[in-house]
Image 1 (cartoon, helix red, strand yellow):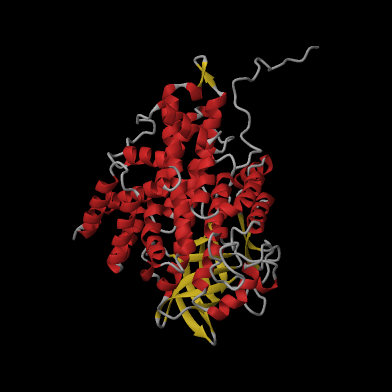
Image 2 (tube, helix red, strand yellow):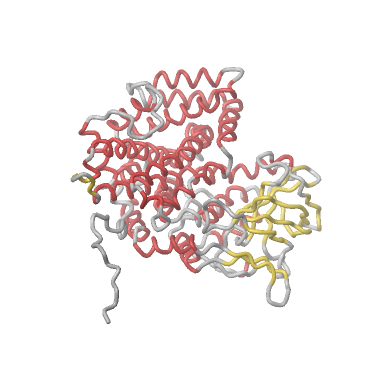
Length: 547
């Protein structure tokens, strides 16, 4: 008896998988931005990184880590409290590779001092590429890197921790941190009643000899699988930063009781939790009452990574959209040859060019800030502004990328649906949009002369570009207004766009002209592709984005 067949058609007019590529050398805007901002000597290292992370194997690991989400195991089989978080092996593999390539420590020396230029730029390029493959696991990676800045307030503790943070080995075992080959750090700041208002935290810390006992809760505890956490609690002297390990010095499990893992829109590979501290052991970091000042050193770095990660997500969306359009034919022509699709893709490519130039320029400021007051002022003023603009633009950008693929973009088999769900977290985490605008205003109020000097430098770096003088003038006047908070979003966006034009001008002057003309001369249309470029510019933008 003949068996029925369901093969009614041949599959054709579908693009091949976008994998086994070098994420660095195929990305000309990234290559040129790295060179422009001091990282030229790292080209071979970055190409090796790009080839490894662009492999089909790593794409598969990213998919597996998101499809097999973390699980909380509160008790062991005997009823003992453990509060362990289990992950799929693919997650651990990605963590291991990120650690091997130094994403968690390459900007620090073994003693916890800044490694110097161009370590921030080179690391940013790697972080940007890794985010294109799997962004969720980068949460504990970035917090481990950033925690070193906060721990500097307690040199004796930093000296104990750095031998394990400075190693490029990842150790996922549930064991006391001082017994391991390497360690990761998370953080817990937010409480139910306060959210962003950290000074309203109610968690209490009471002295217990040289240490403290912490009792209270955190509504969001990031990366609960980590070996230790930086948390904020009220001590006698006020809100204070503490180092809270998973195990106490005698080797027993610390009283960190996870209530549940958050069920999130995206960021599925990474665990976020609600937690209770029941007299949990902790060590003070910095002076009592100086918790905000201590932790802000860490937050600057995590905000930088939010912007880099969002730029990477957009880059991946653009690359997949371009790849699809070049292999898909509609109405007897390739999608990439259709004028409307060209308008969309080239406009998206320009946005990504500006974004990657801007995050690399910001990373150069982080590189040079310890020795250059002007760069330090740029870093303080622009970090929240850049996070605001890049992170808030990512979800809409990735929606447009999905639409370029049609129904295939909306299906979970592809990567763009995951990117789209992932994108909002970077805009929310480490301070939402309004918080970023308030932080820009705060930087202006504290250092008005330094901030205005930064604005004047941006005006100089964009001199001759259409609309930039007017944008700089508007921003300066807006920041001087007594009711500046009312228009802070508009002013901060203008500031970020001006900084993007300046950064892009150092990389590709022609595309800086296009960016200024379409983003600063008038408000950019709400839809990508609602601009008019010369045909040569359309082709150049698409070819630079993906040869």
